[in-house]
Length: 324
Image (cartoon, rainbow, N blue to C red; front, side, top):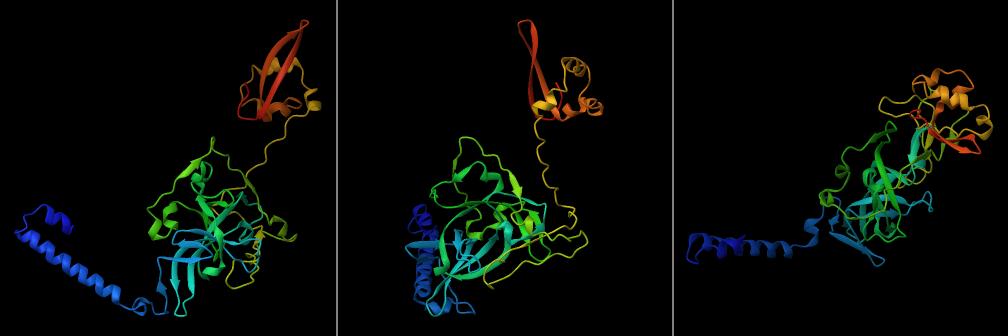
């Protein structure tokens, strides 16, 4: 700004002189700030903010996705994002990170399904020694997870998908509407590039990994069960499942795909049935009596080939949407 004012104004002009004076005052203030001791910048708890921290040959900054040592289960490190880096009075370096829980660390309905490698955002912002940061990982919002992989992330680093926030007070899952709102201010406006897949992957949800923990006597009127806690600075050892009714904002679990028609079932069908079905609208086939109702769950495409003057029917079966 000062250089622009000097460039576009005559040296003898008042604007150029004012720019020179302001530049000198700015440099003087910067020197005074640089000369202040570190203790002047510490907060009430003695924390000195740092732009980054180093450990084990790695540099960790705000916004980095990391695995943090989990004292409750060393095989399942804590998935987290760094929000702050700082140093205490003793010279120890720390990170403040937001935890993301794995499905088995939450409390949910026994019928709930999750994406493979899904994690959920919590409001747990915890301090960890930099020595507890194990390695890098990455969490992608659900809308991008199927499209590619973060560019530059080594292939041996884990990538997770996130769709929801998790409230530990009422054990509720809420879909995230704005992913940037989940990120630190310093990186909220910074996007990352991805190496796109040849074809977007299809995301499928799988049953809860802890659905087997449902009690045999569980009822819809039961209180919420509690997770099992261990170390105070780690997620639950294991969550819990219940049979309580669906919340208004929750979706029912996905329905299983109908099994294909077996060869034995097809013996009940004959060509005369197909000629009848061609005359029946799709909505009417659902009201047909057995055995024709067996095929009401499927689309049926019929082509006729003649071999030795004998009609042969070829059936193509798929989950029902209409009958051709």
